[in-house]
Length: 191
Image 1 (cartoon, rainbow, N blue to C red):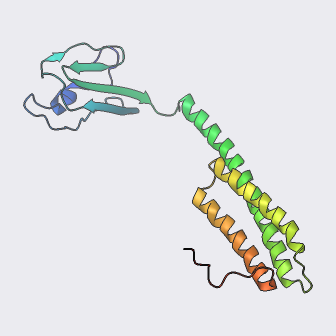
Image 2: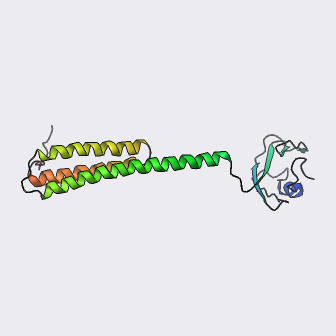
Image 3: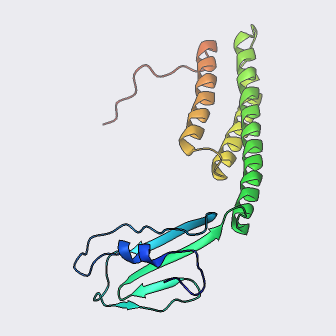
């Protein structure tokens, strides 16, 4: 017995794999394709809702056979043609990949600019505290680029915090090295 709309399946194998009326545990469903190039997808609800009656021999145009409380959905598709939704998702993925790459590249460029400036300031013999003002502006721009990268989902927020921390620690180390910042040896006790 085969469906009226699709002669691709053997229903003898379908009915043999269904659970008996006394069994209520989930069962696996195996379908045998008669066409060699057909791909099968099946969904089977194995927990009966209501009683387990006889098969309702209603083959609809979608290829569904119903048994009271059980539903078996069989569908055959030809391989080789992808749905339009898959193509759209691929186009979106490519656009997002390019956009994310641009955001990350901008962020890395701004970080490198800050780190190079900090390294120059560290090696500079006659550095003054006013030299760090321009670097602080660049650090602010780098923070902004990092936060934008996180906002669009191209980077995890913990990674962003780590990168911001790297910039802040390098700046603080140079300020301490030059004597422009003196950390408290002992924090003031509050009572």
